[in-house]
Amino acid sequence: MKKLLVGYTAKDLTPELLSGDVTCHTLDIYHAHAIEKVFQGVSVVCSAHLPKAEWDMVHFRTGPQIMSSELSLDLLQEIHFLKPKNFKLDFIARRTRERVKNDLLDKIKNDPDRVRNFKAIWPASVPGGKKLMFTSYPGCFCHRRVDDGGLALAEVVSRELLSSEGGDGFKILDMGCGCGLVGFLIASVVPNVQLTMIDSHTRAVEAAKENARNFGLNAEIILSDDGLDSNKGHDKFDVFVGNPPYYSDYRIAEVFLDTAKKNLKKGALCFTVVKNAQCLKPIQEKYFDSVEVFQRRGYAVLKSRMK
Image 1: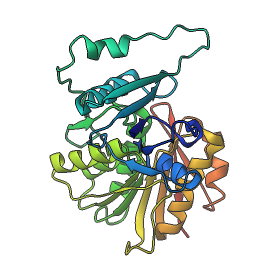
Image 2: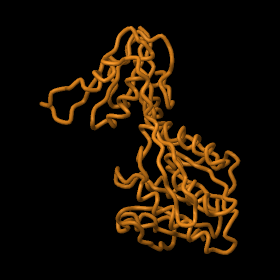
Image 3: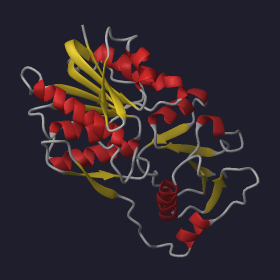
């Protein structure tokens, strides 16, 4: 039996699920690597969209604690158009006694051949820059709206770079770029920047590439879950910007800062953003000698200089 598993992480997989000719699909390269590490030999596809094939069975794991309802609908629509011989919905409710509702399935079943477009286009700008119309997709961080933390980061970095000596030609590394909000907003006001952007989510990379084309910007956009491989021909950077997620006891923030430390040249600047500076500041001080804090839009932007 040719089987496709959608929405499963390594901890969700069982011998029963993995029986037969199985392909695991993930949207995030981190989950792909975790599955490959635990279940060696299992086929894993990490892509923004489901792999097209003649599937005998598709298992789809979803629920409000796993993904947004819009992403669920988007993937359900893709599954419908794959036309698998069999389909099973593995719905994880918020509470064990909550009745599983089929609202998501009904929206597809009631009008199965309607093609829904889940793309969103929304505006963002920084002082002195033109309004940019960003594209995002379900699965992207802050789909359908601007992220205030990212906007605060872009505003502070733009101001700091414009007021610095030279004021242009910066080589910028944007980690956790999402749809490209921070890097592209900086490029809208700071002349001649060179952008390298990283994210672990395939939908974010897809949106960032589309936005780069729409804005006429030549950015290198990389899918990665462990930073930037400095052995692949990248020169050192002048600026690092990062809006890391802050779950898992800031372990992901440490990956961001470690990447910054390894890839910044002498005298380069590192900027991060967080809701509460007291949480991130001591971690950033482990990698850089000093940290300056700017308050903006209810967020703290942390600035350090590479010595």
